[in-house]
Image (cartoon, rainbow, N blue to C red):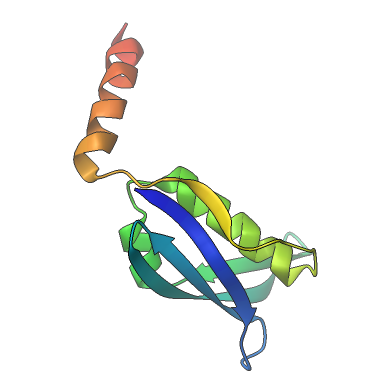
Length: 108
């Protein structure tokens, strides 16, 4: 099913965003929040993802990465022309089928 990010809107909560995503005919809303931290004396920003988002995209990591990259662009103030098609949403069975050739190659 075609997956598309309809909008990414900042929320009143600091560094939080609402992402509206369609998968086929269904529309979902996910909450994302940027948190600041320090690692090895360097400041970093971490993106906290909605638990439903993580669960829903567990077999579609490439789509999840594309969606979070769009959210990062909005957070940085970069221009994004929505809606954005991010790819085809696959089922668990489709993901397993795609993994099988990789597993066979890795065994050799």
